[in-house]
Length: 394
Image 1: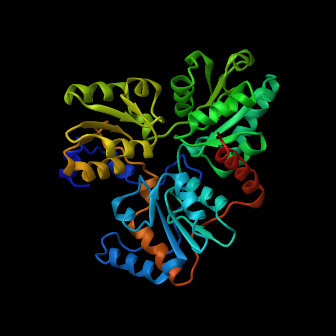
Image 2: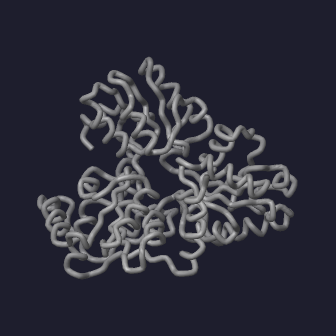
Image 3: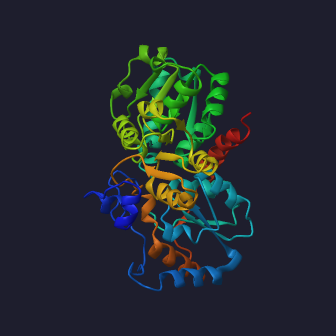
């Protein structure tokens, strides 16, 4: 990112920028492993030509998915772009593609493997591209949580709702226990459905999306919500608190969206009179409450597409996307700035860079399958059940 680009978005690089750009493994991730083989040098001037040549050689055998938060150098090779669930469904709609190269993070590739046919092979260019939010809820921790709910006498009243940003194991847990998956676009519908099935919801793993949807969209109160902390005995909650709660929120969050603060909102309003503050529902409740508009990544893109010329926007989501949108709409005289003053890339998403993509495509073109993401049959069965319940939501 150039100095000019950071100035245009009103952000300033910090000493953490190199880490945020994904050059190191996330120590909190379960998948902090390096990709095998020799990667091309990032300074190789032929990287773009090499990626293009390998992709052309593979032809219809490969289908490249690019998440909205990917780097521009990678997104240029995506056959389709979108959020995680859209991309997984796009992959399932291309049965002729033998290889699905998912430029995203681990849980997204798992979802693609669950939804695609057994003949298709899902590949993640860097196995260290995990998701800190997804890694905040492990299968063992969630099983222990269910034991706590059982001991409190409330498990039979609880319906699990898991965010798409979760591991296949958590999706399978949700399927086994009669729950559903949700995206940031359909979380309200998912919660309405869940409360028709039971009296309480266990929302995994993002507490902020669960709280914001329950309070902002369903009209519940903050007092109806409790936070289960897997690192404390009994989740840090008493049996009485669990019995009184309607929303049991897992103590997880997005490391990108969780950094936006009320001060960020107040500061941008002071600096840019008339600015529209548009944030993702993974942001903290006080940020969402102070914003003018709240919505998923797709919602953010559509809102800016429909915005009038000359309008001003401060966006609270991942910086790669904000930068791309700012460049896209500059010709329409739409001023788009990043809500925070400091660089805020998704560190694990940024691990997918051009060298990793070139290595992946060239390996596949040579007949070598690398970095395959494969979900076991039992996990896939129940995870797919939870996903199918989401697809059937009214």
